[in-house]
Amino acid sequence: MEKILVGLKRVVDSNIRVRVKSDGSGVETEGVKMSINPFDEIALEEALRIRERGDASEVIVVSIGGTETQQQLRTGLAMGADRAIQVEIDHAADPLTCARILLALVNKENPGLVMLGKQAIDNDNNQTGQMLAALWARPQATFASAVVIEGTAVTVTREVDMGLETIEVDLPAVVTTDLRLNEPRYVKLPDIMKAKKKPLEQIPFADLDVEVATEIKETNFEPPLERQRGVIVDDVAGLVAALKDKGLL
Amino acid sequence: MSKVLIIAEHDGAALNLSTAKCVACASELPDAEISVGVFAENGEALAAEAATLAGVSQVIRVDNAANANLLAAMLAPQITALADGYSHIFGPSTTFGKDLMPRVAALLGVNQISDVMTVLGSHSFKRPTYAGNAIVTVEAPADKTVVATVRNASYRAVAADGSAAVETTSVDAELPDHTRFVELKAGKSDRPDLQTATTVVSGGRALGSAEKFEIIYKLADAMSAGVGASRAAVDAGYVPNEMQVGQTGKIIAPDLYVAIGISGAIQHLTGIKDAGTIVAINKDADAPIFEVADIGLVGDLFSIVPELEAAISQ
Ligand SMILES: Cc1cc2nc3c(=O)[nH]c(=O)nc-3n(C[C@H](O)[C@H](O)[C@H](O)COP(=O)(O)OP(=O)(O)OC[C@H]3O[C@@H](n4cnc5c(N)ncnc54)[C@H](O)[C@@H]3O)c2cc1C
Image (cartoon, rainbow over all chains, first blue to last red; front, side, top):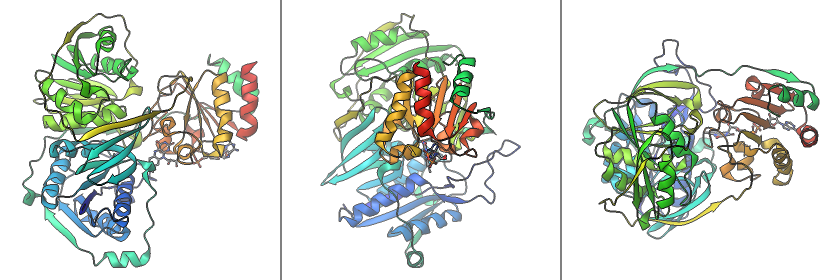
């Protein structure tokens, strides 16, 4: 196949414990470390490995958002992507609108494979890949922990509640990645320098002729009910007694 | 009135408990009239089982050889063909529902509400985001079908004392041939299922190897418990992936959760927030798991766990 399209979402770093704003309008993102969604980083790593094995010739990273997302695209280029596309949009896009945007890019670029993370760790929606596959009328292989390209098809092992499911789908297709698919490479300094010279195309959202979906309105954010720190017992006898006390043994 | 279609999850022989939990969630919608769609190769027994779920008024049975393995690409067009007239289409927030429901939503031209934890009204819900660190109230557009997945750990299965009518039907939908099932490798275990067990014992990276993880199984057996693990324990290959608890594994709500050699990363805690009682055994008194544990014991798990097992087995 010629091209693989990879989605990179800019999200609050996974090591940050987010705080809900006191007025309930959202979570605090001011001054918070932002990163590539970890699942997307895994998607990119897999795409690069497929290209390095000779099963694809070009890896394109895409991000939907404001100028700040160029940071994540540059990181993707430093990891090894060949070029980047930023779809410029000034408001957070919902999953269906993102899927429509990706479809517009798919129609432009004709990739053999679209690789996305299974979920973004900010809104935890887990929707965009499946939606893109539906709109494109192509296969989806979600929650991948192994991806093997075999000619015009790809065999994907999926992490499901029961264990591991293997499916075979024809290309082109959408694959969404789970955490155990691979371990993304570290970016080295020379690669960051090289990435600055790689092409980064900006496409205004309006140029794509995509209809914005009716969004699900987020009207209030609140912190979860916190669990309280309990008692510390001294030994196993104390633990057994405490469990018996609660009627749990 | 809310006319709800619930997509049943099953393994061909029996319904997954997640279906009865979806019914529980749907029952909270104002004036709910609930149908359950059973898509299977031969759904006779499954449809009969769905008909017993309390609160269900109708079961729609769709038999098709293409439904043998519940592939999203096969099911989604059949579900959308049936969607007319329903105000809500719900599925479970399990890997089955997470894979399928967004494909249905996209075909219907709507966004999905993922992981419903509270029903506030016919179009208003609460759901967790940021690994459960923020709970969001969401409003779905009033003039469109509500497609949602139901967070299992937030609901208790409805009773099986109902008797709904079963209607067998065939749907007119073009099914693709681009997606083929190859195999399912399911971990066979006689232990209670992780997602429904009343007690769960989990081990983390501290166990060190698959062999040493045996002490977790032994303790679990003494407590008639299901067994879980942290991502680190799964990544290291001590246990298979289906045992992972957390943001990207299973979200569980047992009466008792025992975390052994698990530090308590936010992504792990997301999976156990709804547990009744949390017990933590960890050698580091400052481990974050103790901030949420109802009962904590600081010490070396390799001496504590066998001693605990012996004490319980007595
Ligand atoms: C996007 C994303 C998603 C994730 N999803 C999940 C998820 O779903 N589930 C999940 O669990 N994690 C998840 N993680 C990983 C998570 O951040 C942690 O890395 C992981 O939970 C750590 O596992 P652990 O507690 O077993 O290991 P560690 O953090 O290494 O903790 C080991 C603990 O064992 C204790 N210990 C060591 N030796 C002993 C001994 N002899 N006796 C007693 N105690 C001992 C230590 O004090 C330590 O607290 C995710 C991470 C990311 C970035």
